[in-house]
Image (tube, rainbow, N blue to C red):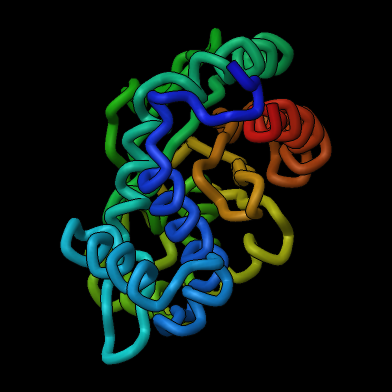
Length: 256
């Protein structure tokens, strides 16, 4: 048998359909049928079948002549991220951070208006907040939440700020939508987020994003500590380098 020939088990139509999804992913503004046919090397009829199948199954949307991927694909990715493959790989890296700093190291994804913990390595120092895999916390007042919200488009962030329940958890919690948008924008520019006693008095945390090969933020990791242990400036100076190194090693997962 020719080694270059496709196997009898190879489903060519599935391969072409996946290629169409990848092309749509590279064009978040959407594509017309003609544009897809040209870029995918398909006939207009073939491109139409693939696109309408994606729409029918909920993986794409159609607005007049323009087709775009739907959030359903993101939900699949989040399910995969939460399912253990990435976090089984990341756990030893996060454990090294926790051991080095004697503080907890956690990872979370965005789910609606909350962050959901998908991995957590406890620190030796006890925090009053009880956290574990599956724990949900408000995104607006947590460091990982701010980092994940920084990945949203301006329209998505505006929608979040208008729809999320934003309330004072402590006297330091930012609740003004304009100031909150500014803090999220700063996190995007800085590449990290520090939240100082906004979730709970005495609790500080610092987070960095985890990005895939396309540069999209798929998760965040953080280190949380007692305010008596690290001043804000000390967190940036002493904790951030360890988080950035861990982030780089975890992101290597996406290029293996």
